[in-house]
Length: 163
Length: 259
Image (cartoon, rainbow over all chains, first blue to last red; front, side, top):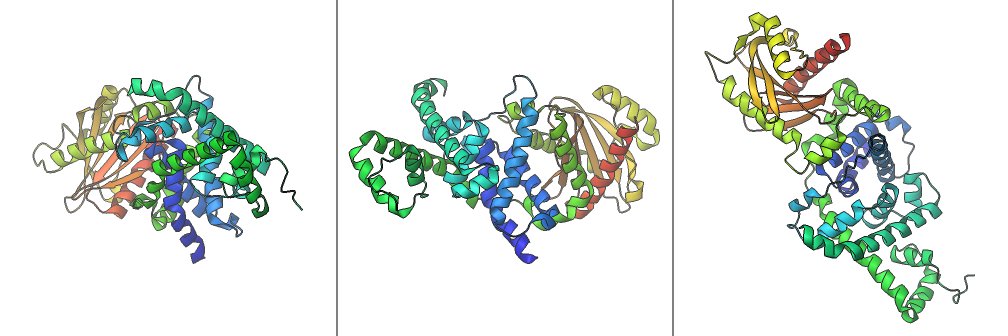
């Protein structure tokens, strides 16, 4: 089953990228990736061919959803950070804006948008990862893009004053 | 049989941007955009959003992959403590019992707890393992007193594991100033004089899997369980450190459950 391991290994960089964009927190992201890998390795017998990458995205997306569900049970908690932009290209305003805009999205919308735009998955693959019909993926995308635009239109001036 | 003259829907605009549109509608969309500037502006915005996202996060995939993602290690580690820790974390997710995810988020602006505690523990390790005459304040011969004293100061019932099955004798322990309050520090010694230490500090960070960090002369394993952060430090031999940390983890786990 060398192909299985190799397939997972090849996907690690992209998984880290996705997890970072999804959580906007390096540590959280790497923990998610590690848990995803451990789970994948343990579930080799459950993998019946198909695209390993999509399967890994599915595990990661579900783990993150569980995490957020646990969070949601706590009153008034928000786990949104925008602090690790500094490790890339300085505190460039555009990078921070898009990060904040992403942070303002509902999780399923953020995940759908990132899977399509950043990870290059097809609508069909995203539908599989999220376990919903393609139509739902498309409406999530549409709402995500609308919200990002609204956020960028509304927040840009405010942002200057904060940082 | 798609009518080229059908009005373009919003869904099609998205599909167009994402390269999901059937080829026979592409031309129709392009014609449409030429005469519908508002839609053309939306398409341009969506493309700009995608570009910004890729510009911000795209290069993360070309970062070198840290050793913690080594699949052989993950696979090997999985059945024992790593599996238990992962299961515990998952269980904690499911029951909502993870304490301090909020704090985790909030504290991420500062150096992470992992980095802070590990740095502190390694610092203490470096200072005290070379100490010949006074490596500890209370010796291992006074274990009950040591446990009681440190537990009292940390306000937490500490478990000081017996690592003799791993060939390590308890030298003793001391109290340390930690980054967020007092920390406890216990030292063990192996047959050839090699020293291992366990650093304990209260934290509101959530439960974590074990993490490994290796320096030139020392390595450390960090984890958080039930509000206490643990850092096991020793010579940079990954396998040995891992097995010692596992022994400590198992005993602490058992000891805590027995209460």
